[in-house]
Image 1: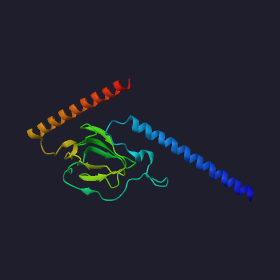
Image 2 (image 1 turned 180 degrees about the horizontal axis):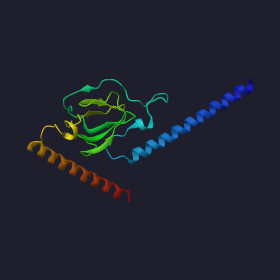
Image 3 (image 1 turned 90 degrees about the vertical axis):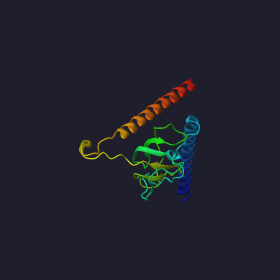
Image 4 (image 1 turned 180 degrees about the vertical axis):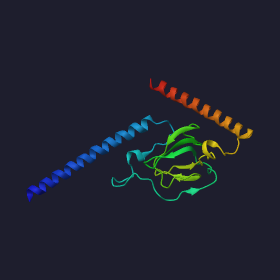
Length: 181
């Protein structure tokens, strides 16, 4: 019996040491992520499994999101979005102070289903409006309403905004690389 108790204590001590080592590694990863983040950027702690028990799965939630016709004030919009297997969403962001217009981001896992025109919330508490995906009518666009001159102007303006956002992102990237040198 004493031998079994000693083995049990040794096993418990080994597991405790493993957990402590894992926590230290996680702490180092967090410090690295925080140190390399842009000022004002949102850092997803879900990547480090904070707030989750090891038994919890990374499957997306199945509750219904709140559908609205446009983004509420102060809620960033994600366009051309897609939901990832881990429940996060990747898309082009607009209306967020921490990111450039049209910058591609990936959120942490969301707490509801991802649907066009919905406001979703991530496990970390951030909210995003999911812009409805454009629907091209018919096969290969056949049967779609003809593009009007106004629609062409909107597309030109959108292309110019996207180009300006890409140029700004490239400038920020170059600036960050110069700071590292």
